[in-house]
Length: 273
Ligand code: CO8
Image (tube, rainbow, N blue to C red; front, side, top):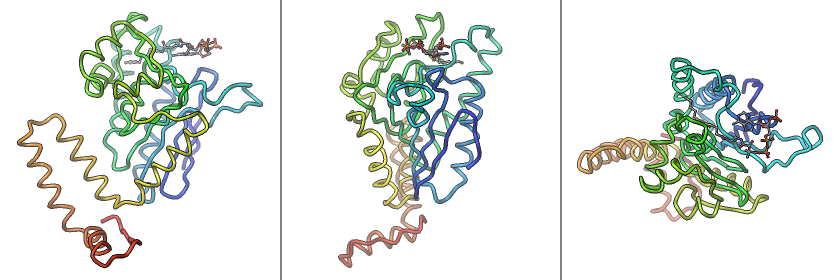
């Protein structure tokens, strides 16, 4: 994996952990970080051995250097100091540059899990929402504070929040700019799980490895069926599912997974097709 200034990528087995590393700015997303994020995701996407990506903001804190808490911030938003000088064209450009890695997180072959280790404000909440699954540490805080800054969510927040928690709750969060804690985020369906701080990475890793042990081609086809069917009418969506169901039935992994059941064996030798 390449060397990045504002990111750290670690690969262990089938799981890549991608950590955003700007602790001095509480991991705020500036253009440089967003461009690096896109490069790192492109690299990960091209690596057939990686089945799951964990996105987080914790592991780059160095207590000796920063004297800081690794569970303080996931991503405290887009970089307000950079955005201050934007005009309409440069703001739009920033949004479009970010759209690429955000869509990668959403649509890439690998499953993406956000391990939210603290502040997930503005663009931080939005990048977590671009992931397939969100696990929050109990101290995590979520908000869309943009309207208090005179802007609106611009990394997909007006769209993804409503899809995740419903239009009424999304409007309330975006219009009030209220902070919500991890338990409230869980209650409204913004996150899948809340765990104690020290359980965040073990839980994310256990989930990642559990997913990676399944037939990864089938998982990626299921992801594509969910994503692409979501905005279709139910008739076309079910037809899409039927087509993709046909595709996975022509694979080695289907014979292997069903064969293991029929033969009563636990071990499965999936080859990812
Ligand atoms: N941008 C830039 N710098 C930041 C940001 C940020 N979003 N958040 C924190 N920082 C910096 C602070 O400026 C400070 O730097 P310095 O030490 O140089 O002054 C450092 O991080 C530490 O922050 P604090 O001293 O403020 O730490 P506290 O513990 O007191 O507070 C908070 C932590 C509550 C997280 C506070 O920093 C805060 O409110 N941050 C801003 C949160 C926010 O409003 N986020 C939303 C930003 S807008 C956005 O994300 C829009 C996304 C869509 C853009 C679309 C474009 C097309």
